Structures are given as C-alpha cells and as structure tokens.
Length: 151
Picture 1 (cartoon, rainbow, N blue to C red):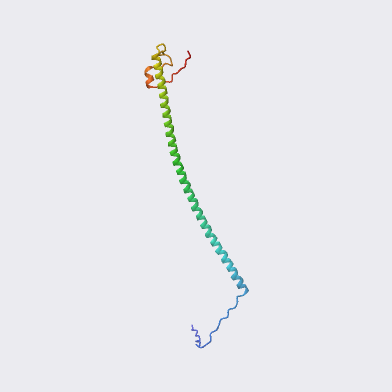
Picture 2 (picture 1 turned 45 degrees about the vertical axis):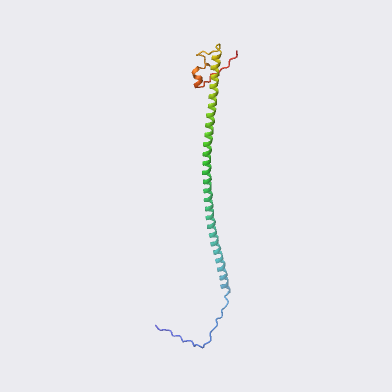
C-alpha cells in the first residue's frame, strides 16, 4: 500500500479563519429538545433523591418515637409497680392497726365483764351459756360473745 504524501504548508501562508455556520432549524430544535429531556431527567433524579431522604427521615423519626414510647411505657410500669407495693403495704398496715384496735377493745370489754362479774356476786354466767366469757380467755384471745339483756 502506498503512502499518502501531503504537501508541506508554507510558513508564511495566511491562516484561514473558520466561519461557523448557524445550525439549521432542525438541529436547533433537536438541541432544545435534548435540553428539555436533560432538565426533566435531572428533576426526576432530584425528586428521587429527595424522596429517599424524606423516607429515611421518616424511618428515623418513627424509630425514635417507638423508642420513646417503649421508654415511657417501662417508666409507667415501674411507677405502677412502686404504687402497687406502696398501696399493698398501706393496706396491710391499716389492717394490722384495725386488728390491734379490735383486740384491745374486746380485751378491755372482756376484762370489764370479768371485773363486773367478780364485783357483783349476783351476776354470773354459767359455763354452758353461749355468751359466757371464760376467765382465762379474756386475757388471751378476744371472743365475740356479747349479748345485751334488758332487766
């Protein structure tokens, strides 16, 4: 194959200025259409990125709300447990005090009946009577055998 020889350009030759022709109408329409498509595609990408960012922010917010709800729920349960223990202790204490007051009252009542019986020889109870109070029971355990008799 042969080589193509070019003539060397003379150094003193004037430089040609290139004249740019304006693009044809169809080329200009194609360029404007390409710009519109590119702008639309950039908008699609930006909206997609914003949507992803918004979804991630929503996921983080929902996780944080769930974490705060779990924390508040556990604190509420702990406070409820403390409240239940305190209420149970108060109820037990009240029951013990009421029982102690009842015992004191009925021990005094039994002791008063014992004193009344020993002071007045005419008033006595037989052992088989259901309302009689034995001597040894009055000091130890209260019994609820009280009957009011009108004389």
